[in-house]
Length: 255
Length: 255
Image 1 (cartoon, rainbow over the protein chains, first blue to last red):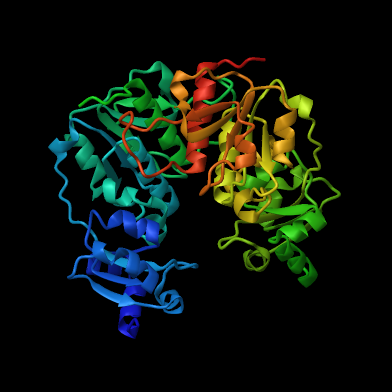
Image 2 (image 1 turned 45 degrees about the horizontal axis):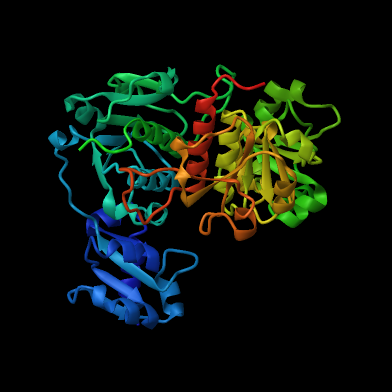
């Protein structure tokens, strides 16, 4: 049984303001919750008997738990089709240490707006062993329910830092890459195993203050070479293609 | 002024059954409609005075046109934020000629479910000069309004054929590629300039009847090489990475 106050609390976490106030976000479904549990202790769990029977040993005794029917879960869920478990998770507090960026490949997002794109980019980072994503303050919130569900377990393994992006980029001493329609063919350029890859907004690309800090302007060539196109690639797809190419050049890791 | 019957007709085109019955789909916004106009004659257009003043010369005199206020457009639109023009376009009737596939790089989709993913894959095809996409009958409908808006002008330049996919794959005489978690490192394999690249369903990958027809099983390596991952890449991102690699091997075109 979930109390009415509890349901109100869960629903409030759909809104960024309340997520920040409560320092908490909602994750749903056995796959996602199962992936987050080894990394973080939920503040609260609502789950069916079946889920609890199978997973209670994974829960910290301090976590508040409600056993619920499917119908009750539906009342609390932020999804259209709730799936056996809903967890309220703490938002991790992480301090960004700029010096720790120096020996890594890092993704930086300049006002990426769509939560689905952001979630997909987290999965790309996870796949390609990129552990840190820097986000401008105008980028979508990674703890938005749509993004959380698109991220899957990547949310647990990839650190996302919201920061003053130009300020951080000014401090780092490593190549800063960005994709531009008038950049240089990525396949003809040297790609370093450490550096920052900046990806821009869906409609406007990389903003002017950040474009000025890019030291290597790249382009994902279209086909056939030099064909006129009026279109661009989706930002998550472009991120995937660029990250794949960085890793292809150095497949065994550098550390 | 748009008639009530007209609004009902437009709204009905949100549903696949009625799109097939009417052989028509809805495209909205000046960018998308502007990109479709050179390729196809709309059945109907509702637009603001401003749009019509700038674009009437692009319309065929046979097209029925309503000049509307922003508010009226809102009543007819399938979008949350309508944008100056809505066009009802004919669904092109295309016959699939299997022999025409033989000298091209083609994408085939096996039950891709999400209209957003399908739209993103059309943009990828357009970027990489892939002119034909084969879809299994279980794949999302490309004329779904969500997909149309995600496709942008790619919808005009890329031919999408719904077909009995195993039947077509059995007929072609060219390499058939597919991505599998236990496939071979794509960067170590030979990739031919012509062939079919099959991408599978978001949750289940490539289905068994189609997997049997794949002649070259590929894998997009994660990083570092051999690291255990529990996740997979989004299907559109994987499509982008694979197509980019095919085109990188042969950047100047083969024809």
